[in-house]
Image (cartoon, rainbow, N blue to C red):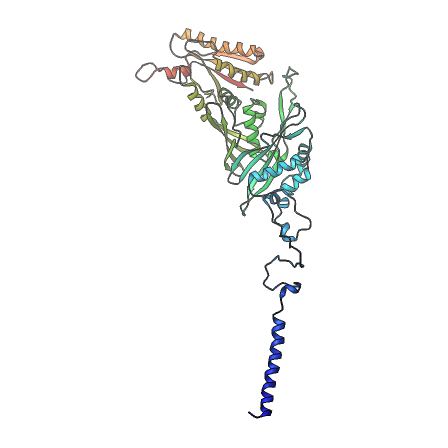
Length: 468
């Protein structure tokens, strides 16, 4: 290699070395020495920029409490508002929904209550009354049972918020109903807020009502919301039966349910010392636009039972138009353990309708403790209107002569009459008649001619017809 060529060769190498050094120096600079001013294009959504020396604040995560009861933040972006339960009334569970409502009631804040239920849950016709209950300083939620489940069906469930006096025992306890419906997303929506039926029984103008202290109560006033709700009527009827409130129960039933049948159910419930089951006393077995079937579950210390209500629409109002309580009677029969006295407080009247029935010991006209308790209910009904009349038909079994049995059946009817008068019923309200052994309910003798003690026990009776 001659000298010129060598100079050119080494010159090229020197230039390449300088270029390489400059490139490596630029690309190898320590990134920690330069503030971060941008994020790579594949950074996760929601990441934010930060300055040196600062710790980025973590993104806020909604908790169960905030998603169930807290109102939506006013600065939240649109996609956040769609999930805010305060606006939609969507909750993770029925218990979460009721807990959230109870919290708003505890604050005496009706507007917060509305926010939790959603804007359409409280109908305008009852909004003022719901507000008055929630904000009433003399009412508070029951600390032991602030809310209870009343019923459950395929469409959802009904719960009650239970208010008790806060400062005065004279304040009437109240309830507010909340209907919860399952959502497609698996949560629960507060579909409806309503109030129990509270009947206004007005004094009926009747010249036959002679006792001004106990006026006859006939006219019934209900709100449109109450009239359109079969479950509300069923619950009110069940509570009236348990409380022996004949007038209210009668007002909630149509003419297809006889007075005797309503009274007999009250007698059976009282005899068995039944009360409404505390949790979920009502089970809706059928619900259509024009008919609803409801099982009412009752408990006692010795037995559990139920009676069935069929409800239909009468005009614009729901009414109880069918009443079955054979299971209650079976429970009472088992409780009695058989014996020589039959038990069934109601029988079919051959002339149509139903009759209450009271039973007697063999060859006796005196009342048992059971029949005395039954007559207390009958007396309460009769004393509510002096025009109400009861017809008592005395009966006997076939043992003994005809004359003897006529006299015995008359003594049984008279024994009931005297007892009712002693309970405050007026003489003109009680009519008696004796039939002896001429109208047996069951055969007194078996087909082979032998004695039938079970049949005779059901013939030693007095039938009571409420002639209203």
